[in-house]
Image (cartoon, rainbow, N blue to C red; front, side, top):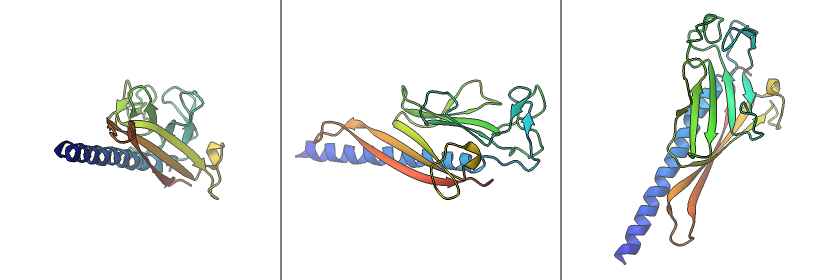
Length: 184
């Protein structure tokens, strides 16, 4: 009986930790997404990461794998100055060109500041089995047009690390949120 109680307690702790990790991910992703398109100086073209880069609030599927588990976000937010990423050649202003992506091998969500990070930075524990972005227009209808996006639905699926003794599988938790872009 003590073993069953211990297993139940361990399963509850695991489920709580997994849900907390998913909530943490939704929180920071939501904060980052809200700033997408912040452009007080009406930037059209930037020098970062290369000369002639178009200012686009959102770039869907930047790794071009056909799965909406990553997004690239542009925003002139690090002291808005009309320069996305900073002066030509410097590209050192943080948080203005960011990619958020799911790493299905490590079961993590990463964030890469394309101006300051050499590689993606792991932001979550290895419990995230899926990340899904759905793009909606002002009427909350799914859109494939980045210029029409007013809302982004974010779904995070997290998987427990302990096998469920009763079901013989890992417990999963899926949490979602809807983020309104400030610029729309």
